[in-house]
Image (tube, rainbow, N blue to C red; front, side):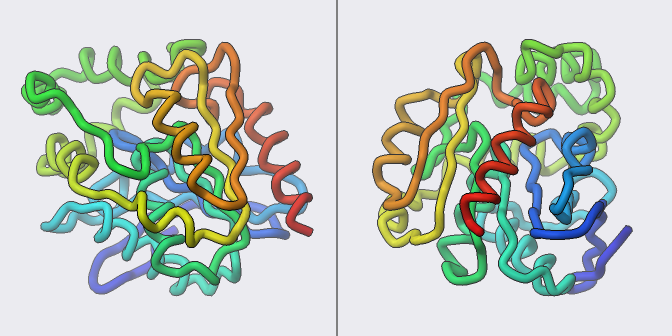
Length: 251
């Protein structure tokens, strides 16, 4: 399905009825990453392709703030009332910004191995590799597999969607992850927040997320032992259990 936001078509999937949950994917990803966690009793799930990703249209500017604005307008367009936001990786930064900007609009926030509140630095020597993914699907698949080390075979299914990403975004998203800092806003977040971190995550340091959790008034940090960067793909049953428990605690 598509929704039009300021001349930009946004693709999304939706399933079920009940408490609304909006899933927001990470870099080199799309709504497809959530396909195994869309059907949950008493929950209405939404998974969108952000602009510049998947089947959604491209936009010229790239920043966490712009992506968060499109996420908010997506929620407004579909009249989704007080959803739980669940952001993975890059999507963690985007959902966090959306909550900072609209503090009364959400019931809760789940951050899955998110980019930290003060940004995520990519080493300069890795930028040529990010650019090379455009013409090297095998290398891209290898990189995606490293984000899901306990279920590497799933990476193959995500390569085509990853290659749909705007050419500007291959480096542009990494630059965007370096340019923000919402640390000072964390103390003002009043909704319940859950931060998940897989013990095998090769991307996001545990210490950054533990520090982040301490700065949010109503936040729990949960370590997922034996899981990598992507519990939503590696152990969807575990993620659903966490989400349902989180949702039930809000009622």
